[in-house]
Image 1 (tube, rainbow, N blue to C red):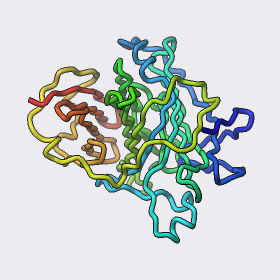
Image 2 (spheres, rainbow, N blue to C red):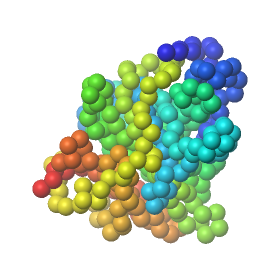
Image 3 (cartoon, rainbow, N blue to C red):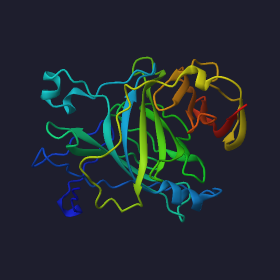
Length: 338
């Protein structure tokens, strides 16, 4: 296990696609990068169970991420981040190994600092990587593999739950540029007792000609907690990590369909304002599925993300809707199979 102190790190900060960490001295060890999370300055809301959320959401997380298109097809890593040797061997890579630092403070309701570092593959030991990162101003931050260069507006937490699940979304879609809706759903603990979660980030982009909104891509992160928050000072390792999932089997439609009964619900807004329920479900790996409806230049957007819980008899659903570009509804539900 290799640790690199802060004084030997280089800070890399981007708004769009990540940039590789320069100055790597060896391909036989992972280098780490220090990234500083931006903070929001919004007025502090009153949020139920906020101290419990802070304890659950804060920590250092290891994981794997993959970007999918709107049809649920895994997208290969950008070629400029893949060594030539992989192409010569005919190996196509779809998954990033990630390290995530997140922190929510009891005295700062509604704010979440989150930095995701993605490790660039190198030739050598399969665990070797060079770290690079990006960060999003305000509320939540996410690995942003599908976003364009224009900065997305700051995300803000609109739904939080005591187990660390949340929905983050802008109050309104911008007149130009990009936007993102992030859903995080905790799915229990691993066999080692480590908390596990999935983060699904819908990247929205305006067509520069028609100015209509479109779904640019969906970043899926599968993560498990590696320990308490350590202040972004030291976070690194070699070997281990979680398994790639981008090209693994998708959840079966029969596992998603059927009759379900809502047992708990958290959210706000107008449930009937917009809905993705009429859209076809896009099935993904990891027991995930999604529905989305993105229409027009005014910003009629509806997103639904679901995940099966361990055992398959319970599921979580998250719904977000924009009406005329304004956030109209956000909700997270837990449902039991009827």
